[in-house]
Image (cartoon, rainbow, N blue to C red; front, side, top):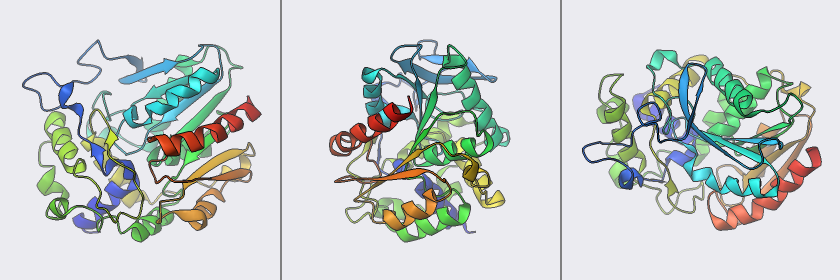
Length: 332
């Protein structure tokens, strides 16, 4: 596959990367291209798990049912999902973490990253915050995060007590490619971004030059959507720092391995809440039904007056929160 298509595909996998707000400048020290990460700055809330320092924090009663929020990307961070803190006001322990190599979490060489490592990290995050073996755990994943949540459930059927999934591109690689094809993902970039078509022309730098690579990737993803974007994004999303190397690693993994994360999902009989948005013309009910069909017990919910970023802006969030709370309560 050409580098142009790879770039379009990768940027489309977690549409949140498109139109992200490049608003990290107020937090970066003078002389730095991007903010420091957790292993460089002890003031950043973090947890040491599985050989990595992950940017993480939790809200709500420590012994309540846990809701682990899994951000999109690959390579974004949880800043755009901080509305989910409100779930803690309803008696849940809400856990946020930036995935390894993303946001403000520790960086590693490209060769380190694979899906098994992401599963191990998620296991470790859950173990870190869990106060008893009987404490229930729910996953709340958006976009790439919903794909990761499903991939994790596929290999850890007994690890969680429920899942809320917001518009995963697909759970088999062909569905991801089909979805991105309908979105014409490279077509909705701005004119400025369309001038920059080759990944290695933009993200030049050695593999261990994370600051330079992340800075360039932040610039690349800060351009914004065109007005005719079919995914219906409402505005620019807040973020701390992109993870260029982890983005590239999981993009390559998808293309090389063409994964299928549905092989065991028919055994996960717990109800799953599957959310899609009214304004994402590339997704819609048909794709939601296709992707969610891997689960035997699924509730589909359409968030009205919102696009792919349905959890980040007031209308989508206010329309979706009551349904998420009802779902969690039913399983609590």
